[in-house]
Length: 302
Figure (tube, helix red, strand yellow):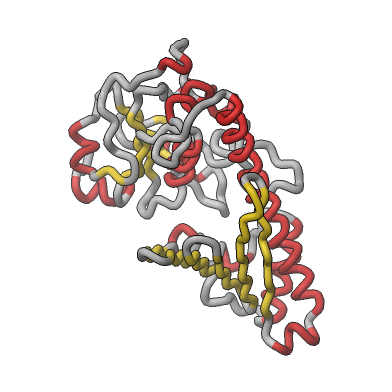
């Protein structure tokens, strides 16, 4: 079972909780650091697989709790200035691990820091975008970066640039129902993207797409189109370069006026990657198909 098959969310006004399953019984780590960590976990559990892969709790606005196999990590963000934040990270282990299992501790922290490097790259790119916006003299709109500026500089595939205006209403920014999507099949203002993927078999999603997919849907591969080049220090799925994303989205027919709908097999774990990338670039008219292909088959069937 992959993490996407056992992904659960819980939201409230003060916190959010995400629970994710164990990836392939820890048998196929994505990097050398995670291979070492998985081996340490399996040795400690004597070959048994932990109940959860991870539980992430975000307490708004600045505290994150992360539970992994026999470790609790507490991160507290302290703003120091416009471009400076201190992140205090604390690791808590059971007494027997803290005192006698040095390899377990070292392996876990090495894997954690590898992922932290990827997160840091995301933050630095977001800071660079805000800095460029500030230098251009653009103002923030309701606390958000100007979508017009980001779209014009990032993903617009025509020559309109900063004068971009949406030609049609683009109301779907989170989820879209199967019924609503069915009404827009063949609509030139809508682009449907199949994002199915499996960590254990990275070509499974594309094979499934070629076998059957929603009418008119394009396919985007998590590793090839929705991730950047790996350096060995930037994690499993680093962010692509903005120019590369612009080319990818333009090839799929996405421009500033497009409503994008991403889908995967069911729970949206892979589709949300495309959704996040589009919103990161400022293209708010991007939504995930509620229930994915499974719900479409049950409710629409074509």
